[in-house]
Length: 178
Image (cartoon, rainbow, N blue to C red):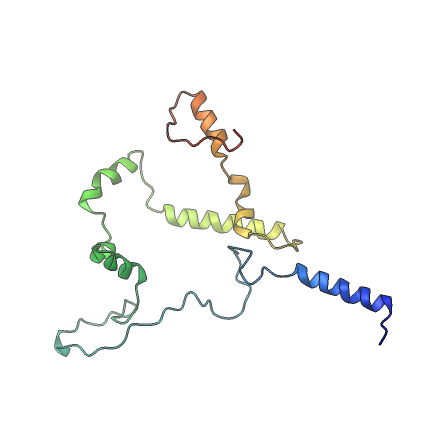
């Protein structure tokens, strides 16, 4: 059966345009700020540990509403224990005594106890402003990198600036254009 040229050209154009799609399944984009689906996030679901009967029911701790459950998974703590570390250290709020000098050195110019909340609010504002500006985007991009592109630091320019000030940079790698 003979097909007209217009039909063949239209089918070829449709195939070419369909080939331009993709990347929305996470293969091209590493990070997206907005969750575009209406279902649950499959990476936030962690199966619970198997149920077990304790040896002494009377020795069980009092239940803590909203607190951790004995069957809740904690992958980070489990990883620390599997690698031979002390998993109990992660649960403590205060820094270890062995790290006291590091904590004091890092806070020598003062500390802001609400820095995490401040940074979270600033990050939310930057992403909100970025979302308003780029409404007409149609090509797949990494939203996080686009939102923070103006704040990138050029490591080679910074190295040159520090060297001009007399700061030694012995561990700096050579520039890729040399």
